[in-house]
Every structure is written in structure tokens, then in C-alpha cells.
Length: 437
Image 1 (cartoon, rainbow, N blue to C red):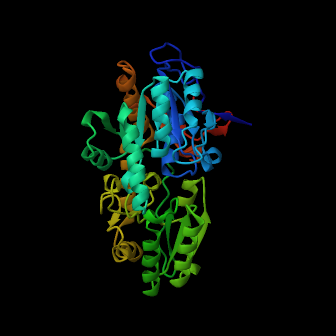
Image 2: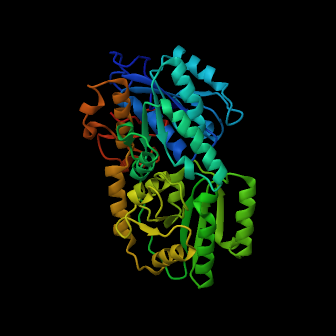
């Protein structure tokens, strides 16, 4: 038997006196509009917010305009989810459905997370006369390798944002990008992504002759730089270094999967790669590697997988793009290579294999940084304060002390490893009787 930890509270409108199941006043109800096709970084943010926002007085619901893997992989299953499929990029039929949802379920605010979702959310917000918040997870003008697609996405996003009440950028670099586009400074707030505090896996000592296991976890698409990682891996193997690559994730398209696996065959490194496919347990996958590598070419707002590796004490090699350097400081809590440069990436990987870099202090500082700057609580508090501002609430989360909030951890953290008293699992389900008191 299981019990849902994150309980959906009683319905209530902002400024009311209703209480949710977490003991706080219900300040408002928010409808999140998402794609839902995959369960990658942005979708994990949406899932975490759905579970944690009730602690800050905001009940949530989710509408998926491109329903897919999110429906099955999400953790917080108590959060109501509706499907309102957009059959093409310009399909506005879901607008009517969203307006009905807002009115019937008394949503006070609509929060869109992608350019596609924004198109229908902005129209629905205008018709239902509720405020609109837009979450910038990555730059629409630099999200794919297709220049035309980027231009179309950016155009639709820019047009739809004309009526947005506020924008949330996941990194300072994204905020600066949108300021350069002409958006007013007081309309954009930076709220860094956050992840649950994880189990800190010990650094495995490398034994002579035993391969070092590098891992990449992503929705595999061209901007993630997988080709660069394969070439770096091939160069190191050719130089006599013993290593393996564990690739966790699904491919965005079958054609791209064919291209990547053809390249791996051409480089003669198939025997050194484990293709695991999609996994809903990123922490379980991080436990099986020695070092995470994310060789992104561009378009990273603030990668969730980097923060998740930091939380688990796994060393990170990433590239110096967009918001990634806001989390990873080269030589202090991780390593940064030049983007689109297999030689630079191979050099950083070689430093790890050779033991030139002391990984233990890097991982320790990374875990401390995650807990201090990139927790679920800090992310949710920032989002809730944007809601407060948009809805005109002045006496709510701004007066709360985050130190009194629970430290959100993954439910797979062993119970005997939890801090006493103020530690709660974020995952949607856990055994009955295991709820902290």
C-alpha cells in the first residue's frame, strides 16, 4: 500500500483563508501549460514545482499540449493533468479547453513553459482574464540546429509574450539575452533550477587496468554535442586509455539515432558504449558512473542533469555555454571544456583518468553549492514570489524563512541517511507509515 506524500489541498482563490494539506493558507491556484512529449530537464522542473508549490500556498494543475512520456514518468501523480493536444504548431483549438479549465477549476494564473505552450496559454489567459507567467528554460532562438525552426519559434514566442505579465529565466545569461531583445528589466526574474538533495555517492578509486566510466544523460538531439563526446572517447581509446561511456536517454528522432550509431561504428567504439535508453531514475544512473559529461554545443538554460550530478557528488565535465558556468566553476566544483571542440573535451576527460584532478574536493564543493543555491526549495520559493508579485500578494512567501522549510530529497535516499526532523522526500509516492513527523 502506498500513500501520496504531496497532497492536493482544498481549492481556494488567492487571498483566501483556506488551508492546504500542508498546513498553509491557499494563496492561489496555478495552471501550468507544458508540452509533455518527453521527460527531460524542463519537464522535471514542471514535475518538481507541481509537488513543492503547495508548501508555498499554491495549488497546481498541468495541461499537456503534446502529451507523451511526461504522463508516465512524472513523480507527483496527485497533481491533476489534462491532455489538450495541439496537432500542429498553429493549432489553437486547445485554447477553448484551457479557458474552460481556468473557469471551472478557478485557476488564478496560467504558467506556460515552452513557445508552443505559450501560444495557446497567452490566448487562454487573455480570454479568461487571468495573468500569464512564462518560464524560459532555453533560448527559443538557439534551441535547435535548424536556423529556420529557431526563427519560427522565436517569432511565435516574441509575439505571444506581448501579453505576458512576467517572465522567469532559469539563468542570468538567459535574462540578459531577453533584455537585449527589448523586454523590460522589471518583467524578468531569474529563478535558478533546483533539484532534490541526493545521496552523495563516494568517489571510486581508479584501479590500474579498470576502465573509468563516463556518463551522459540527456534527450539526445544535435545540440547536446553527442558527436563531440564520441570523437573524444575515440581519441582517448586510440591513445590507450581505458574508459567506458554510459549513454542514458532516448533520441529525439530515429534518424538522429541512426546517425549517431553509424558514427560510433565508424569510430570503432561500439564495444566501449552502453546505450541504456530512457531512465526515470537519474540518481540510479549516476550511481553507475564515475563522472558526468555534458558536451552541449549551445542552448542550455541551466541543465538539470548537471545539478542532479552535483547533488549526488558526481564530478561534472560540461561545456562553457549559456547558463552552465553559473553552476560549474572550472577547477572549483567541476570542469569546463570549450563547446564543439573534441580536443578540449578529451583533455578534460584525460585529466580525470590520469588522476591529475582531485575529484573528491570538486564533488564535495559541488554538492554544497547545489544544496545552497540549486535546491527544490530555493527554486519553488522564487517561483512563488513571482506569483505573489503578479497576483498582488504582499504577506505570503516573502515572510517565510526557508530554513523552516523541509529539505527536499529524493525518496530513494536511504532512511538512515536522512537528516533528522526536517527532511522530506519529493517523489510522489512512498510507503505508508514512512512520512516524517
